[in-house]
Length: 231
Image (cartoon, rainbow, N blue to C red; front, top):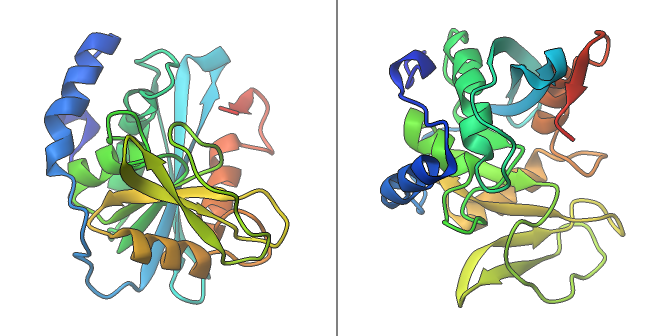
């Protein structure tokens, strides 16, 4: 699979440089549907080993719409960037790109465990990954980073806009009745309506999409000692 290899990218090591990269690349985010047929969906997630010195990224590829597991990959790389809210892509993407490069075929769509446009500079991890790989991406985050929203009805499938500074930056989506919502936003080459639809179609009995659940188990190394999830 061809993508932007981590070894070919000059990654910053300070917040000022990282912010400049976000501001330079955010204009490349495509906010409309440029999707071909979606036969495979992937989830990416990240954990850390060696007391945070090593980043462990996992990608899990599932068939769509059946959600049967098809492929997986794990990559490790030295942790290059500190934990700073709003800049997680610089900490996580070097290893994520390494995992994606191990796949024989690129997935048709990636659901990221993180923000897309729902980000102070409109360039969260899902946007960054989408721009670097040109793979359609969606941000499906467990918590809100920025923005406000109206009260959300309790039933599965209900959603309300997430807004910031007069702009709709995402959706607060109920994936299970009377369970905490997820925060869906455009990553790259997918509009918000499609992002909501794909998130629901990838979610079965649980709050999080199956893509995220499979990737999380790989990334957190639940059966291995010395591995901890970023949460």
